[in-house]
Length: 133
Image 1 (cartoon, rainbow, N blue to C red):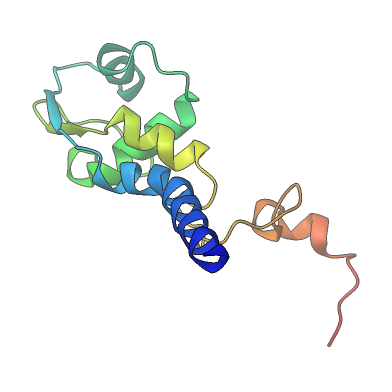
Image 2 (cartoon, rainbow, N blue to C red):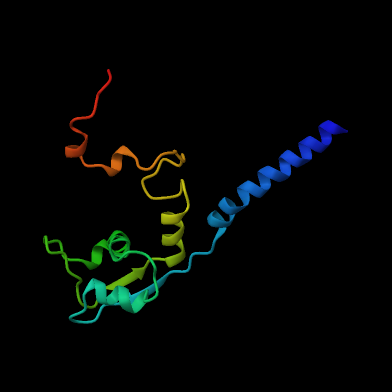
């Protein structure tokens, strides 16, 4: 009986720990669109479509550019093309990807301890690090 109780507790613990990840995976994603008007900038579109976002503007800009590469000019000062229809990124998905450990873009899925990864540091800061074979 003691073995059964332990097994049930273990199963319930696993379910309780896995539930937030299931909720993230099963969350509904509704896509909204926005048509760019003449003279609008990306920052103006972000202010219109996501006015109360706590995320930094750089994160929102990157999300818009990644989801809508066809809406921007190819030349180096990338600007919005008038009349383009933008897919507005889901705010909840962006929050999850930047606040849930192991669920961020570019992460391998493993939650590592420590303050930062070596990918966060540029090469000039790492040039004097000790290297092991």
